Picture (tube, rainbow, N blue to C red):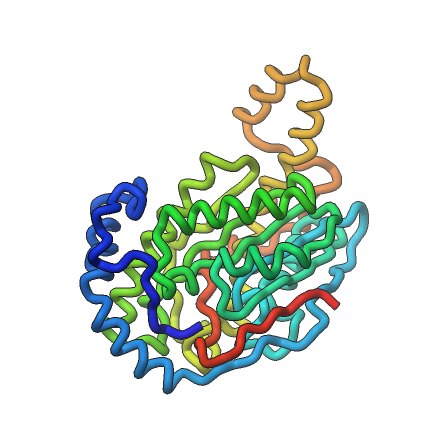
Length: 330
């Protein structure tokens, strides 16, 4: 995807304020207005940036694998933009789907099957059209949804972005069942080495708005968590194009997603049990207030030190000059 925005709402259309801004905070809304006012500058600087950012291909198949273990299989499906397709990496087992699977396998001792379904340069709406039909109607335990950078560059409104993600999750669950969902954070474009100032600052205003809108999904959809950022992305976490995450970033990212997913996976057996036995509803609520206990089949591996630092979300897709490519399990 090119770092040249293509706004859905031109500055002249700001009269549709409620639809465009949704429930954003005042600071985020001001940044969003600024990005619209400065769009001509962004388009000019983005055009120059596009010509100098190299176009990296996605990794080659296979885009699936199994982490060995004992007990029932945990099934992980990742759907997303170029990060899931592995742009900037050398091998498919370095992608976030694979690193999340290894982190879950290490923490639970269970086998984990993973599959990545990525489309370089895709917005959520584009991925819904091209990737959803490729999802097999097979159960999955965890769904990773990794989008945001291309929607930032496309000047997608925050409310529309959140609606697109919700629709994608609902459609995916109709094929794979009520899987736990981790929606990855929208990458902070201010950290991207490939983007010059002020382009990176203006685009970061938009990525922050999409992040804020996505966080609202936690109250709308069950068994879903949205990744948040506590640390910026350093230059050492980017591939050679300064635009995509490298192997080290994907490894840290997988650890973070596993940390977010494990409580949801632990709760799934309890949720099924509560549905089957309505009489135990009150006891189940009390148990959740007392804190979660790991079932035997989710027993964690021995402690390996402190939790790794939280990674500041997936960077972006390939420039628009690259043809969009779909990477699917083969």
